[in-house]
Amino acid sequence: MLTVSTTSPAQLPLGFRWASVTAGIKASGKPDVALAVADEPAVAAAMFTKNQVTAAPVQLGKKHLAATGHKVRAVLVNAGNANCCTGEQGLEVAQKSCAAVGDAFGCVFDEVIPSSTGIIGVPLPVEKLLDAIEPAKAALGSTIEHADAFATAIMTTDTKRKTASASFSVDGKVVTLWGCSKGAGMIGPQLGPPHATMLVYLFTDVEIDVDQLQPLLEAAVDDSFNAISIDGDTSTNDTVLLLASGKSGVSASGNALTQFTAALTEVTQSLAYQIVDDGEGVTHVVRLEISGAATKEDARVIAKSIANSPLCKTAWSSADPNWGRLLSGAGKAGVPFDASQVTIFIGGLLVFDRGTRAVSYDEAACHEVMSARNFTIAIDLGAGDAATHFLTCDLTHEYVSINADYST
Image (cartoon, rainbow, N blue to C red; front, side):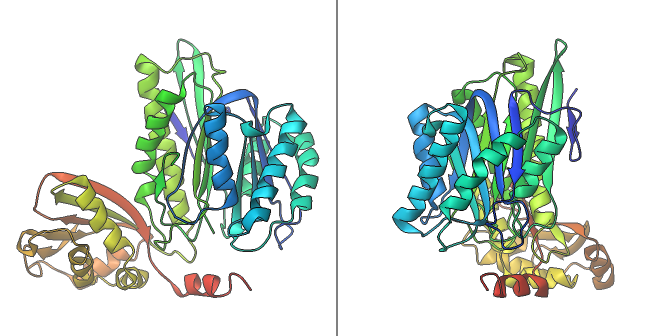
């Protein structure tokens, strides 16, 4: 039976250790370097941002995965500096830090994946990062506290740690998947295969090869991290990395593969929700259910159009049931549909019925359901059988305040 948790799991995946230290990269003086190490090279699947401007660690991470055939020994993450748009110096910093980690653990530097998050365009002080490696190595451990420390150190404007886990048993052997994420602003992920920021690190001890693992990750990401938006801005550093140690002794086949797929779905969707729920200034989390589309892609395009509409997002902040903005947001998406076939429900209440305001529309009742932190907007386009879901949020004064002063 699959067991899922967003708090402390019963156990962590075997074959990994985690740590964090304070290197002085964050102005706050909080932990800002996180290190994860596999006891032996782990099988890796990854997806990175599709932004045309990519940070040095993203560029290097792609090269390292290609060079090693998707084998990873260590992950080095720094928070407080994105190491993006920093030229050759930025690449040198990423390369030197990977080489130092490789020396520390007796592996080739290609088996190290770097990640960075924070402000763009500011040189990352390499000496601070290099000086943190030996203390991080000394702090490594395999307890919940060590994993939580890793998850905490990657945070920037996040207000809380984001973790999730799932486990299942096969013939008395337990398979565990544990993951953590960070992200609260600059969240509008467009992740593709190797090909303020969202970073996601997933660890499992199932036995699996990369040809199985990569498509499983892509499918899970499409229905989780690629189906969320806080502000619609795709970061230069977005990374999702999944490592499999194989230490459980359970091979991903048959029922084990089915259960692992379910575990990956549960964990990624939990982490995706936690990102939106902790969005900068968020007071309402909105689930969009778009159905009756000609294709799933049509449904996703309309969902994104509504999710990223400032008019819709500001209405949600005050629980204003302005269904006209929803319909307009759908209409501007460029997807053909007939408004006379559309229905819109807010929190289960019919507000728009095939071309006009619903006879039963009750503004006060809609305002009440929208006053809850979580509510659902369901739109049936009446144009087909395809559907999708999408998580988004409101836009508040606090979001503006945070981002108006972010670099100063």
